Amino acid sequence: MPDLIEKNAPAQAVASAEPKPEKPRSLGLDAWHDLRKRPVFIISAALIVLLIAFAIAPSLFTSVDPRAGDLRLHYLTKPNYLHFFQADWFGYDGQGRSIYARMIYGARASVVVGICVTAGVTVLGGLAGMIAGYYGGWVDTIISRVTDMFFGIPLLLGALVVLNAFTTRTVWSVVFALVALGWTQMTRVMRGSVITVKQADYVTAARALGAGTARIMFKHILPNAIAPVIVVATIALGGYIATEATLSFLGIGLQDPTISWGIDINSAQKVIRTAPFALFFPAGMLSVTVLAFIMLGDAVRDALDPKLR
Amino acid sequence: MGRFVARRLLQMIPVFLGTVTIIFFMTRMLPGDPAAAMWGDKAADPAQLAAFKHRMGLDVSIGRQYLNYMGDLLTGNFGETMAGRKVIDVIGEALPVTVRLALLAFVFELVVGVTIGLFSGLRRGKAFDKSALVLTLLLISIPVPVLGFIFQNVFAIQLKWITPTVQDSMNLGQLILPAVVLGSISLAYVARLTRTSIAENLKADYMRTAVAKGLPRRKVIGTHLLRNSMIPVVTFLGTDLGALMGGAIVTEGIFNVKGVGNALYHAINLNEGATVSGFVVVLVLVYLAASLIVDLLYAVLDPRIRYA
Image (cartoon, rainbow over all chains, first blue to last red; front, top):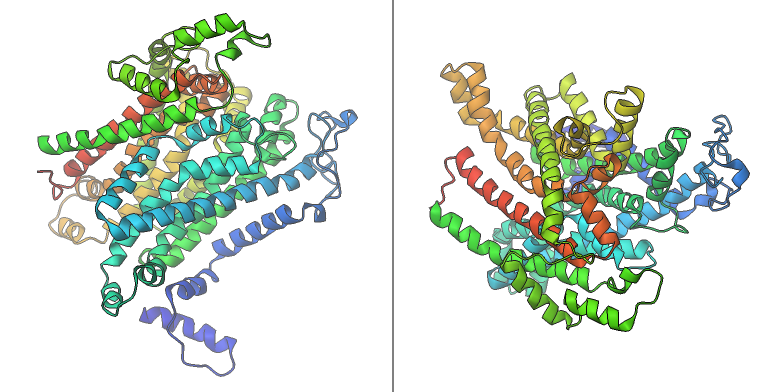
């Protein structure tokens, strides 16, 4: 690390008038200092902040009701690209609903599914992985075999079967299906990471000092084993958003009163030759969202894994 | 070697049974009565319905149905669809199509992905590497339905190189475009894995030795660098073959390929439990076989890995 500290020193000196001796940084803080300087991180973080703003307060960006359809305005009305932020900016879909408004409102379903599924699989899968890695023996055997069983079922296929059981599907049914089938990925990552960490001297030292199992697991092992899980989770978040859109596209994901880019892509595919813009905007928005999360994951991985620098 | 394979095969049995159990209960516990659905909107005649359920083996408890299904499966009987076709026939019709599609996609992602990864790993930080990174990032981010429509629009509707949808699902030439769409996301992962692995191994001692003892560049890269860098790529490709076959649902739908994805999609929509679990059994077998092959390939790629 010595060269890294040297590299950061001038920046520190400029920031504060009187340079103080630098405190030793934790891995997380070190990663954060590294991240702040990466253009990839800044761009993706800005995009994600914007998306979350769309998700929380869509009415700030458009005053049009995304569900209000006027059949006189259906997709044959050409978009008016100079009407910035107006209802007809990107034209209207087959039922005369504003494509621009639906693009903004569609962010909510994607962001909620992405964040909730990632949180769910990280907590559930991470816990299972930690138990398997820490206890080893037959506990590990059982958890690992269950993980293997779920690994044989492709995520999309399993989610289709589970979601088919719901007659009315909301964001929460999609979250449930994806968490139920996706947690095993995190279990494998966490298990591998915990097995490496638990052999470290500081874990033995903590045990020798009389620390309890819970304390060793959450205070000593977890902070040191979490980095690969965070990386996989960030990259997977984009994947879950894409999966939700794919499920909605297939007609077995979200259903109509919910606004989802996947549903809009599905309805736009029928008019792809007369109204390509109806496909372009939801599809473009979806791709940009997935791209932003994958770029963020890449940047976080580079920052957390100094070997790759 | 033989003992290793035997042990792995034994370990696969519980995994196989477990996966089939999960999918059995997922498909059979669904609400809605697929047998009653055979009568459409009309109310079914109770006597006929009971006779039909008895013939399909649906009139016993779910536990009993499970035991019957597993017993039949071990004798190679996959059951019947609600319309009375043998599930094995449905699988036999769809599987060859998807095997062709998945293998085409597999070869595409392997050849193109490893080539891109090799050159960008060797020229790390140069223009080729940077453009390859941007391209793979874009491929990973564009969801399959969107990519499918872009390809269909550009190559079939604008350039007219091919027909927009596949007319003959067994024709390899017509399957090329769907295979490219199907393999493109994995291609990006293969290229990135190869790149990282190559860049890491470039600094290894054996590389310096190989160059120092005067081996030609082609040999240094081919036998020393590439072979040693393939382990993470092979691991990914092994799990990917099964994913390609099961994940073809969207691609097959867009390009009208009559394969496993298409059949599965219809079976899921119609609540055909026996058909869905039949296909999943086949997919799980492919997945398990591929992971065994990957383990054996490790020993071929790295002679330090030996299976006693």
